[in-house]
Length: 78
Image (cartoon, rainbow, N blue to C red; front, side, top):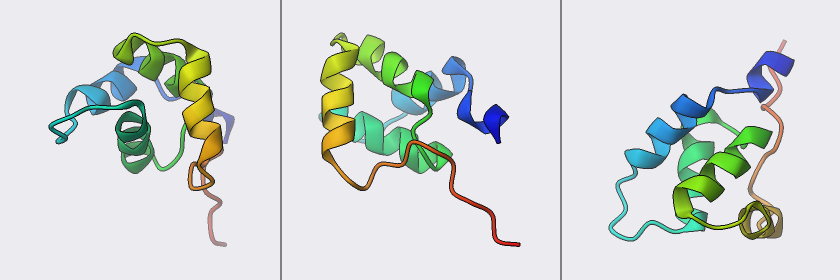
């Protein structure tokens, strides 16, 4: 499972660059990453911050405010 937590930055950036929103915000970017990957890996916070030209604290503030964001991959059914 630790391999899933380190999704490569290029994959995250590709998701961000292909957003279908007319106005791209921190929230829409985080939602796009979570929709594309299934959760928000730690490195996604930094990639979103760089993409939006804001601080990681700004991104973390949004991500931690909303309870719908996952920071770990969803569990598997056995």
